Length: 266
Picture 1 (tube, rainbow, N blue to C red):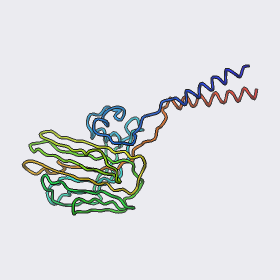
Picture 2: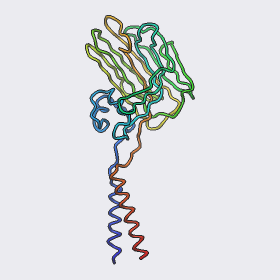
Picture 3: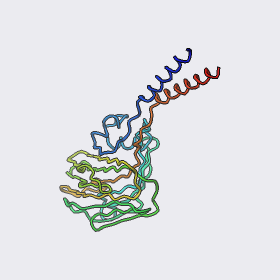
């Protein structure tokens, strides 16, 4: 008779354990500015997209939201013909949060931008070779292969100032899958940064990211990344990890199992 309450408690404990909440993480899909800066993906309450992203790369709390960056494809306005307009860049890490390192180009590329022109691009990887093609210009780099990715973040920036300018990604595809309706930044006296995050259902090593890019400005040509876009490959956590309360319930359940075993031996 004395065993029945113990069994009832154990069953109840298992039921509670099965129903315990789990930490929310990134689900496959497409996320824009509003989604990434809102709950639950912005627990620090950042209002600046670059701060939000550095938090994700820097071990921000809770850790289930953190990203790992892979080599980055970059399209930018340089400082004249001697400064790159294309790049395949090393990943960035930010540890502690906001103290970042990396990002230097493995391979720079050079081309003249045409005001208002829309140009096709392809960023791809085959084996250990990464390639970035813009129009008829292609750059590539090897020996930077490594772990796979499962997400792509498109980041656009248009710097403020006297010049009105815009940078836009459009007609985006990742491995043949359409990604949103594009993303772009436009400035007229104030900086503007925007992001579009695509999270896939599975990881990939080889990839092909395609789309169009358009840069436009009035007056003097912007310089020094005043107009820029980046294609960031990321490893983003998508599996559900139990919250600490779930582990506490698990420990309680194991304790009850042990209690039942001891009483049976007695």
